[in-house]
Image (cartoon, rainbow, N blue to C red; front, top):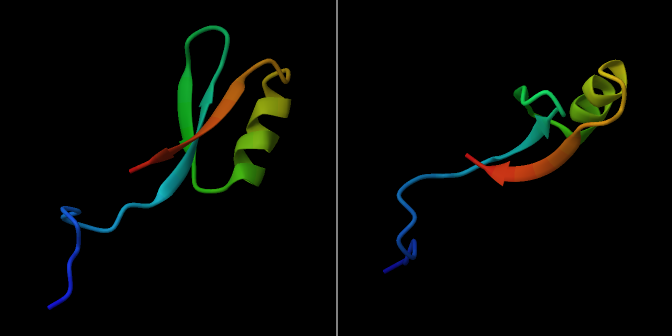
Length: 51
């Protein structure tokens, strides 16, 4: 019998961009998050999070 080790479903990684003014957006790829950060002035932070 296979064990799913307590994980009910599949999780995916999204990239969360947090801008200095507090705006938060999520993108499916790091490349998209980087592009959005550059458009916003390049001062945001990007982290990978599980959804």
